[in-house]
Picture 1 (cartoon, rainbow, N blue to C red):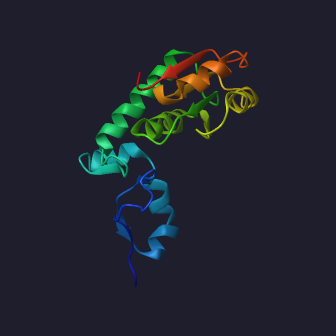
Picture 2 (tube, rainbow, N blue to C red):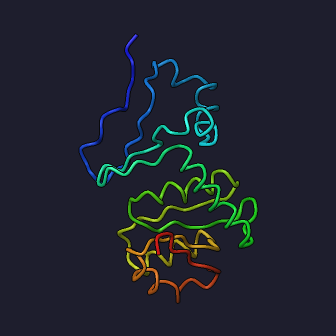
Length: 165
């Protein structure tokens, strides 16, 4: 049976590279594989030093243990800021190593999150943040100018977090 692997870096340097173990096509449909392997904590326990992803543009590797710790820390921060199960936050940043951390925090906490295209204008960002009823916006220093312009149009937004600043 042919093996499916994802061990080669993508041609586009802006994409994430997820080094995955080789799986057979039947493994991909197995509820055991799909249900058990999606949670970062399990990977962090089984293979803490294996890269969870490698940034193709910089070569930065983040291990499962690092991703687990970082997303857990952000999840606790969001809880301390008052977000509870099914509350909503938005993520507005370019592809960087903090992006998956921000997604993982919501996945592990039962929070809804909206990933906003990093090429949108301030008014488009404000529209999405307002309509998604996001209480917190997570962004990067690179997108801070657009966010500052959008903040005046986001009445329900309680906090803006800059992950690398």
